[in-house]
Image (cartoon, rainbow, N blue to C red; front, side, top):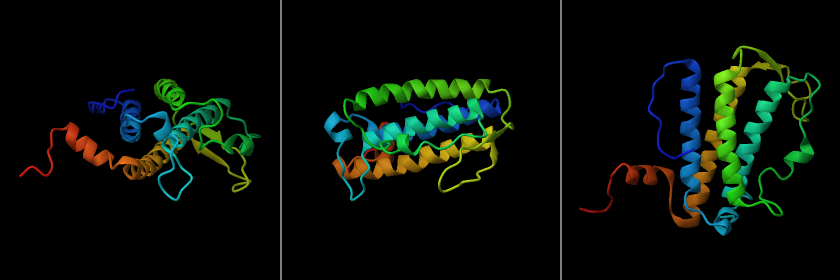
Length: 184
């Protein structure tokens, strides 16, 4: 996926959903642009979050929700053990690998949005310690939750990046659009 904005067509609901999601992903990728492996693993705030860890989490989040929808298992339980390291690059994982996986997952998720038979289908949600009887949500509602989650973490990424080197999404987008600053 590139960081170039998509032309808004609004031709179908599904294409509109993809356009909105791609815009949120683009904001996340702007915060990740040009990072070294070291910078991707660096904590720059009092939080434990890093840019590499956020990219991994957002990717795993998409994978998990698509699996929740496609498997639609009323007995599913949230995997707490798998979530334990979802926000950090561990062992032999690299930022470059997670960038590639994020791009591949983007393509898979966009294809899923185009092809899922029914956006109104009721999907059982996994049981979790914070929600032992979660009920069901429509595919559409789950997708919107995924978008919100990505937007939420894009904000985290922007703050982390700004603390790392002063770069931020808004100024990067403005510069890319041809704005100049401080030149009077």
